[in-house]
Amino acid sequence: MSVPRAVEARRLVGKFVLLVAGVWAMGAVAFIATGLQGSWPPLLNLLVYVAAGVGLVLGAYYSIKLHLTADRSEVDRLLSKAVGYGLAGIAVFAVGFFLIFHFGGSS
Image (cartoon, rainbow, N blue to C red; front, side, top):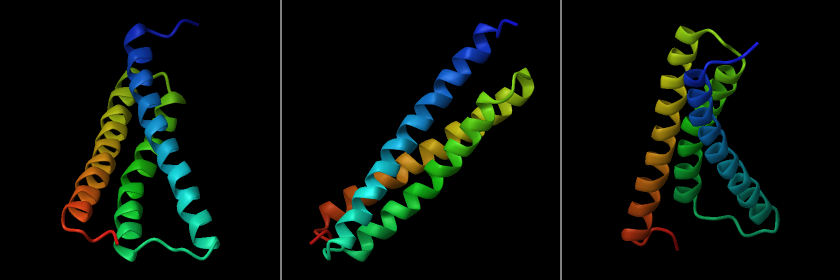
C-alpha cells in the first residue's frame, strides 16, 4: 500500500522533531555523566534544560504517534501537536540559555 506524498512530507517534519529530541537526550546523558563525576552544572542551567526537555519529549511522543498512523486527518492533528511542542522546547532552550549567558548566571 502506497502512502500519499503529503503524509510522507508530514512524517519528514516529524522526523526532524525526533532528531532535535534525540540531540536533547544526548545532552541529558552528558549532564548526568557530569554530575556523576562530581561536577554538577548550576541549578538554573538544569532547570532550563529540563523545561526545554518537557516540550521536546512531548513533541517526540506525538511525532512517534504521527509515524504510526496513516489517516490523513489524524496525521494533520498529530503534526500540529508535534511541531508545536517541538518548537516550544527549542524556544525555551534558546531563550533560556541566551538569558543565562547574557546575564552571567552560568558560572
